[in-house]
Length: 111
Image 1 (cartoon, rainbow, N blue to C red):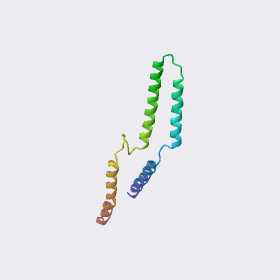
Image 2: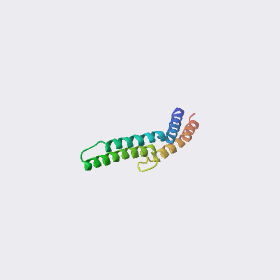
Image 3: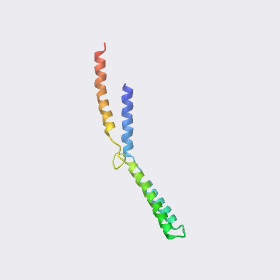
Image 4: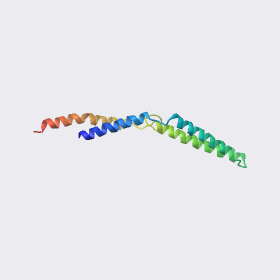
């Protein structure tokens, strides 16, 4: 039982550490730079029809922006529109808080 409590505490510490880590600014800079370069390559691709090329560039840029927004939203799971609820963690915490009381009551009742 004590090993399980220790494992729960270790997992909680790991989750708290992971909440503090996010995508570094350097990687965001690389993502934006490569996306800009790819968009410029599409603009300069030389498609014969300007309407088709404009549509291609617009759709390509929209997909790149959608990918980066998804990365940003997944980077902060407890806020934003795709937020993860903290209710299961609160429920687990209330059960964990009750464990020492149950364990000590069982020890006192056993001969």
